[in-house]
Length: 372
Ligand SMILES: Cc1cc2nc3c(=O)[nH]c(=O)nc-3n(C[C@H](O)[C@H](O)[C@H](O)COP(=O)(O)O)c2cc1C
Figure 1 (cartoon, helix red, strand yellow):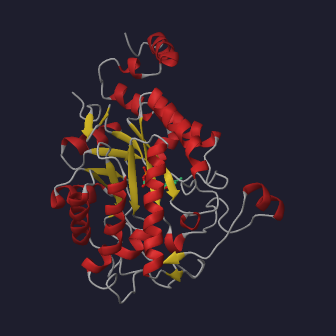
Figure 2 (cartoon, helix red, strand yellow):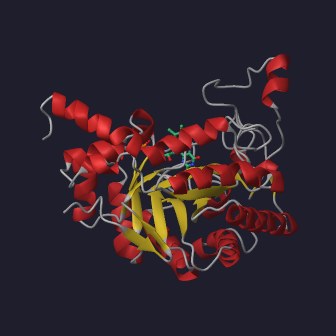
Figure 3 (cartoon, protein in one colour):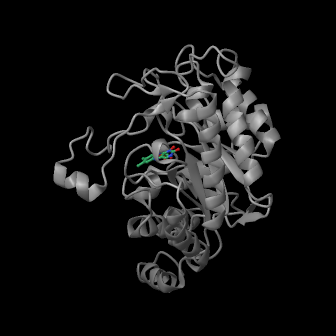
């Protein structure tokens, strides 16, 4: 019996399996509004058998977007196109999640495949180009190539928190089953948490308790605005991989506090600040998910260069995590769960395909002598 393909329940949501698509920015929206690209990009993962599909980092405000072409939920007009996506995912057997995000000092970034702001005037008009001054815990830029941010005062922090709450309500209106609080990768909440970016000397800077104060106040406000029967996940960078940055022990304390507020799963990523020494390799972040799971007694998701079905199964078997998240491997093979079911010999994997495809794939495999 495969653990990977056993259902799992978080509050009122039962996922058909434990494989989820990690959020992935598409840099393909205009004015924060989802379009056909997002529907097809995300929809194919439902057809491919993922139990949960998480929509990319979605700005709670225009200033909180990573780039001008990231999705947003700061305006009611952004709800309906996302509703179309959640409806499609549900109709095709996948639950829907959305990662709510504020990029802080890493907002207004260039599109990664461009590398810098290379847009011509004509492209700027077509792509709805914008650039703006970001906000952050402290007036310290991410790197020399990023804009100098404005430090948030208490009023600004309250405004950001309200933006988060309003976006949470819009996510509910858009029909999402789950929300994920983006508290990782050197974005705003992570900037408050980490001494690398947080140089404040008020009650929001200094000790770990102080640095957690603003992220936890946002987390609490979001959880209160989100229906009780729906789960909330939080994505964290378990370590900055930098001397003097957030450590695994700090993150265990943060995860425990999130759990106490009502977060149902901690999605364990890492890093986000310049100068990190990351030991990249297969399964490199799994020990982080395992440490948080044990240390904070909270369900976790493991992510990061998980590509093989046997590894995914073994991570769950060993009790290192409760969910498996795939990002680039999902892009490489949107049918990964269906293929993994076949590899792990889950009973009648063909029945898990969309009816329009399953019988035909079975016939193909029979013709090749791969199945009876
Ligand atoms: C194209 C792309 C976009 C990404 N966008 C996001 C994002 O919106 N939010 C986030 O938390 N992580 C984002 N990530 C990180 C992934 O969710 C994931 O943590 C990382 O790629 C490691 O997993 P993988 O080895 O399975 O790709 C992105 C990664 C990629 C490749």
